[in-house]
Image (cartoon, rainbow, N blue to C red; front, side, top):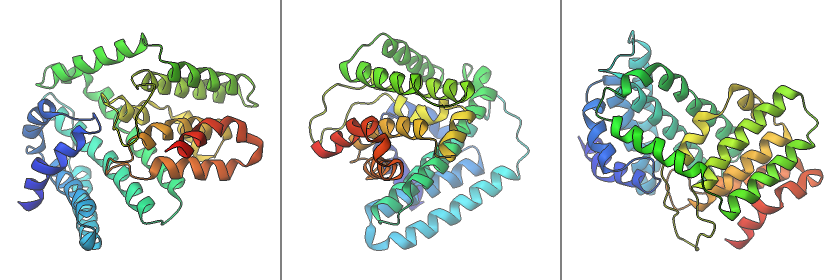
Length: 299
């Protein structure tokens, strides 16, 4: 009960800061959260991860608790013969989303602890979170019949409005990444995968303010967290293979994470990603990483 209470009163409000959920969404999600064992276990696991952040003196205990609960969640999910329906689609999507965010929280915990290999962990997280895309594809026709339909319509409106925005930063990032890919020594298929990822990232930048004051959290609408979901398997493979162009796109995404370093799910992940990518790529690619590194230098 302590973990469930913490999730409702502490963890859910903490997600409002990211723009990934709000009170309206929370009210819509709670019946789904309580309806399936695998979702309930994952909620408790995610709550334990948040308690680890809030109570560092007992961090090890909370992490072990989170891992045990997530193992139960995954076992319950894998042991359930799931056919997506209007009754369970919200629960399945909630479960899949929280599994992804849980993985990000683990990367942030390792980054804060100075464990290292944040880039490896983050690529693993992105691959895991990208799996939500398949769940959405199966559930989309049912979601319109549920109480989250208004939330989907609002997200679609936000994306439509973003596509018509022309902020200075968004334009500059789009031009820089476009130039990078124009001169890239890579196959046409890889180039297309990178262009698609850069296009998805540009939509996120179009929702961002050009200037963010120090310690001011940008008001997000959740599109930042949709970016990993919308990545193609081809681009994910390029990241896994450490292709420079893919890593440079990721570094520009990391700038947006760095802007949200006060959020417990993110912490120092953005900064460390940019630093690890810069070290890995070395002097030859330095020009393409000047802007992400200049953001770090100013903050």
